[in-house]
Image (cartoon, rainbow, N blue to C red; front, top):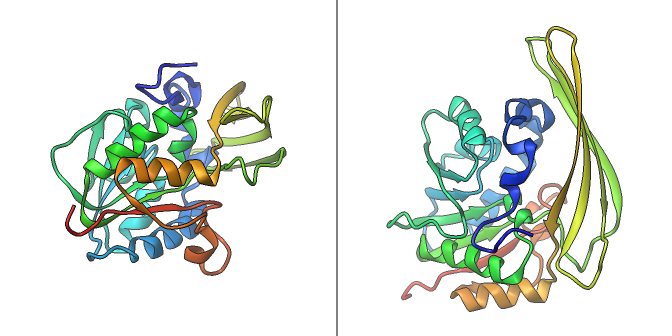
Length: 259
């Protein structure tokens, strides 16, 4: 396990030499419903939300969808390769290479978003650092919005997959299997198989296992409170998605207007 001064995403090929395949592995249109739910969550802030800090912004697909909702995004990720992909998609956004556990930009935003990049935080101490980073960049009256894929309360082993293609003739697909080696801890494991078809018809198959956080609701509440947020109760994904689609989980912390 990596030290808790960083998340553990940097060790995976998906976010390094495979980053060029990200738009095909995880197509941008799949983020539309997530963005709608996130925009609804931002509306819970006491201040109008226009400027959003996206911590762990990855390839910029969420940011691209949120821009269409008249939001201005500043994007932070520790993967230079993923930032390069995002810069092609979002040239109008500021991109900053940095660790969401420790970065301090010296300015505040109406809302701070940590989408599913928070999955790569696997200890409560590290989760607190993320929440503290969010609070440090959240102006009074703003909100911190966290959207993990997994929680210990709801986790069930499963399988999934997806993929896409581009006009150059490249195709990519993935298969995923999630399981929990030890239900007593705060993480699960996702085994991935990526099949990558280049334009010249060559094919590469890459397999890697990702360790992902799966915290209990009560842990999220405790961590957000300890960081200085006033957390909304429980998991609010269904409430903010409206139609039942979108993020599986949303944890929302309000920063008091006088803090």
